[in-house]
Amino acid sequence: MAYYFKIKETFITIYRWTTALSITFITGSIALIFVVISFGKLRNLCVTFIIKPSSRSILWVNGFRGYYPPLDKFPKHQVLYTFNHNAEQDLFLLTALGLQNTKFLLSEKTWIYIPLVISALATGTFYIPQKKHARRRLKFFKKTTKFLQKTNYSIAASSEGVHEHFHGIAPFNRGIYRMALEANLPIVPLFINVPKESDNRTFGIELLDEISTKDWQVYNLDKHIEHVRTIFVNRFNELNPNCKTT
Image (cartoon, rainbow, N blue to C red; front, side):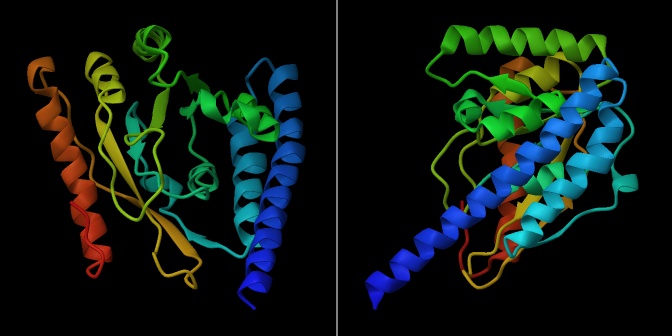
């Protein structure tokens, strides 16, 4: 019986990923065509009318339900959106928001998912080198910081980076916070709520209070990062009183 359930679970997982990548490939390709022929001018419209409904459809088809803050509650100025990342569904939850003038950071590790790459190109996603490529990673942050200083684009990135998924909040990386400091961007935390219970298939994103970086200094950057992480930890513990993290 246990073997039967294991086989069934494997087939369900394959079905979900096949469905998700198929929809992503189709809608991402359509969006990318519009972005290319318009020289990028239709990118925000594609995010709103193609990528956003596509991501919500992927979650729905795979049996997940999401809840999102209203788009008009998000800041109109340039910010760093940062979020916790402990489920494969996070990417679809975030793109389901339909954020305008926002570049997402994705790990180069995800290059193997071609449909995802196509959709990412349509939305103007930046691919960040992994930590083992220290020199390229440093160049990436310098280049992205200059881009943010010259444009009005916001950027969205996971504070935890690539890590083993678990029910909790992982340690935060420094790179995106150094970038935010040098580009003079306030921090806007997006808390992704992923219930631990396997039968609860409702996920959600909460828009938390904006954090100013005007008084931040490089020498105590770690202290500021820990403050932001504490906000995530506290919210996690509020929603998961029986499974607290530190």
